[in-house]
Image (cartoon, rainbow, N blue to C red; front, side, top):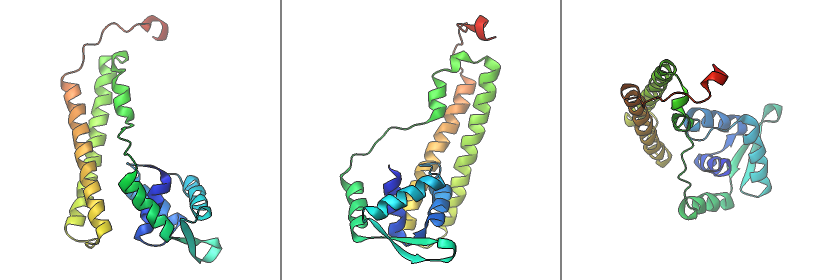
Length: 185
């Protein structure tokens, strides 16, 4: 996913300011695709220059609310239907797992406890959000239904990662002598 398409998708729901979009990224999309305030504003400028969004209104202190244009809607739909999906999961916890053999057993156990706790808490937070959506607290509009589907994927992924961390604690790999230990210890 690109930030460009994430912003177009959010603006397809309705007009929003850069601040509103930043908040939406932090609360709803942060674990999927983090975006910093300056990058969002830079991308909004590019989207406007490309005619995919336009300024809907100007508010106090130069606040701009943007809306998607017809061309922007065509682009987000094209991306969804035609662009190949990048299935690469860039998960630092899994990258680190390749190098667990460099940790002491105590360090590894502490690390895996922290990972299990983090992933369990993240899954639980998403479960709470899903329950609110299931109770209809956010309505039943198509964007809400799509968000619920995405939340379920997050629940399942974080739940699986929590289970993996617990499994790894119970069945740690055999840790050989650490090469170079005399250099770093």
